[in-house]
Amino acid sequence: MSVIGKIVTLLRGSARELGESIVDANGVRIYEQEIHDARNAIAQAKNDLTGVMAKEMQSARKIERVRTEIERLENLAIEALDKEKPTLAEEVAAQIAEQEAELDRQTQLHADYALQSTRLKDLIKASEAKVREHEREVQMARATESVYKATQSISENITSSGSKLIGAKESLERIKKRHEDLADRMAAADTLDRELGAKALEIKLAEAGIGEDAQRKEKVMERIRARREAATEGKA
Image (cartoon, rainbow, N blue to C red; front, side, top):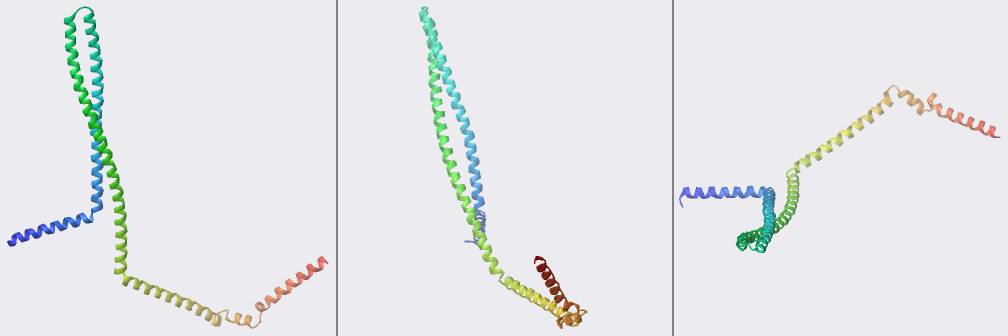
């Protein structure tokens, strides 16, 4: 094989692989489009069926008109015979023969329309059942594909973002450490304020039981006891 021939074969193989990859990547979408096309074909078939059914109804009316005409002509032929007009009766009989031939044609045509109508109805019913089955299949295929994509995405993210998770954990540890440092600083500031701040002396006096704040509790208890004794004497 010449070099050009090999290149052509390579290009054909690449095009085939590319086409297959495109089909595989869009399999569900293609499937849905095929179902959509089938629905359109069924709708067209239904439209054609209405035309056949209309022809069937028209032929039935034609048959009824021909039968009515045959009956009318037969009555006329009988009347002509009653009036001893055999030649006229024969002319009427000739028309009756033509009408009967037309009746045979219309009867056969009506039977053909009826048969075609029945076949189309059966085909449409079968096609709709198949389309509904395929619609269920494509729903399952789409759901399955979604699950596979989600699973693949999760796996890829976990695999590719391992370092990101480690970095996030380190960031969280730094945040915790910063919060602990902030809490320690606040506690230290409170301790320093208690020891050296403006209220440091009052705090020390209160802890030693000196000053108004130290005696406030005892004064409150004395007032409560006095109210209790007064209430007891009043009841007595």
